[in-house]
Length: 83
Image (tube, rainbow, N blue to C red):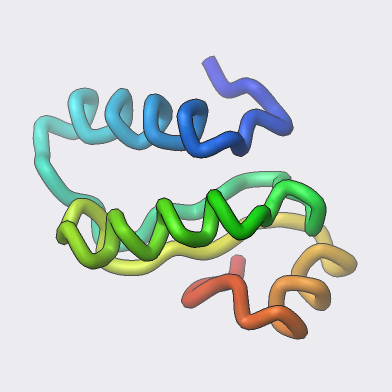
């Protein structure tokens, strides 16, 4: 079950862990944050995401969201991947 608007580092880490367990792997190529808002993209979340890339648990991260947030994301350089 997906909870919308749940983008604290703890919630995102738990979601990633559930996905890794469900897939039976230790790494995903791309982690997309679905329907996140610009306000959800906090410095703490960004630092955690970069740390996960550095640790090798994710290859890249990005957003899958509406056009307004996508524009904000591009302007801030928050993400590697947009959907």
